[in-house]
Amino acid sequence: MRMEFLQRSFWAATRQCGAAEGPCPESCQDSDLDCFVVDNNGFILISERPQEVGRFLGEVDGALVTQLLSMGVFSQVTMYDYQAMCRPPTHHHSASQPLVSPISAILSATRWLMNELLLLLLEWRAWGSWRGDHRAEAKTVFHHSHKHKKQDLLQPCDTAYPVFVHQTAVREANGTVECRACQKAFVMQQVPSSNLLLLVTDRTCDCSIFPPVLREAEEVKYNASVKCDRMRSQRLRRRPDACHAFHPEENAQDCGGASDTSASLALLLLPLWAWVLPPQLLR
Image (cartoon, rainbow, N blue to C red; front, side):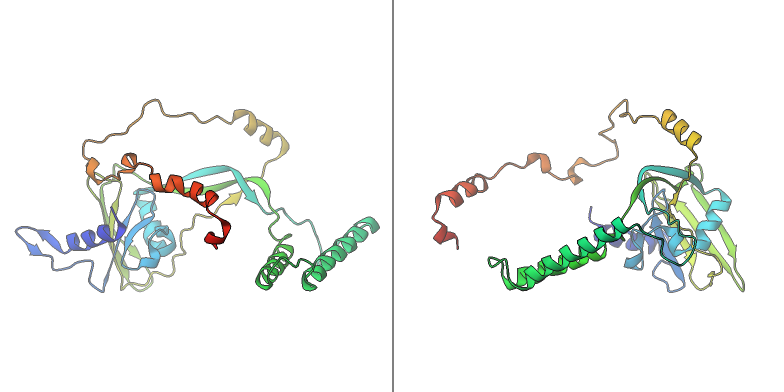
């Protein structure tokens, strides 16, 4: 199912209250309402603003996520990434540069001379088989890689980051968020037979006093003993005991037909033709 079709179906469904009632007096198309469809981890799937799709709801509306956490609609779980990459800490205690040995200074000067020699060869067209655009591209790539070589230096580390999970026992919720000069009302309801949630909030109330709820990862610092204990207690991942490849409410015709594709004979013979034909015909 394409995202555009899902969004059109959603906006059309929010305008209908039922067969008897007809069109709703209020809908998500109103200028004073904000409507979101999020998954069970709080990531936005449908929004009136396309730039918000795919982002975490706490980045867009920190007041709403803070209230949902306090009501128990969402719970925060700490996850760990044992294969992360972090920037190494700097140990300089002052603004001055640390002292270097004479050997390090000689190596730095030699490296600089080699870099300048390579650039000189590029400018003098030492590699005549290259065209002008290739030389300019190679020079740009060389400058860029040399400039950012030290900035991209990372080291393996462990990080911890928060994950927000919807409590499936809470299917409906409503309330208000106390802001400075107003109260921001909201309604939450779970979409049947899915892990999606519909959230409708009051757009007119300004709740900028609440900071955004972010999912930033932080490096976990270990001492020697704790790090060894963690390595011993780390469990290996194992595959599930059973495979769940079918759902009674799923329509198999909506799935793609990748398993029915077959190889094209013309595409298979194309490399052979390119090898047999003379090179002049391929230019």
